[in-house]
Length: 71
Image (tube, rainbow, N blue to C red; front, side):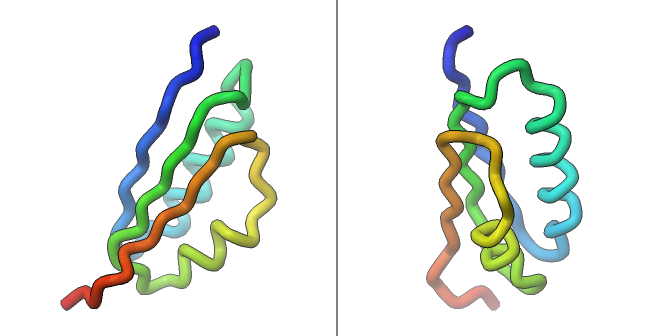
């Protein structure tokens, strides 16, 4: 199977949805060799820390956070 890149943008109030999405992907994919990139635009639920401390099963996962102030 070819490696697929998943780019997942997030914004406010999406921590629970991202958690459900990752759980579903980890459970339902035949291979966890895919690349997963999560971009956190505005983080009002501490999503970045939550994802950094989560036990990920994907071998190639990157969590990026917007460092600019969000109005």
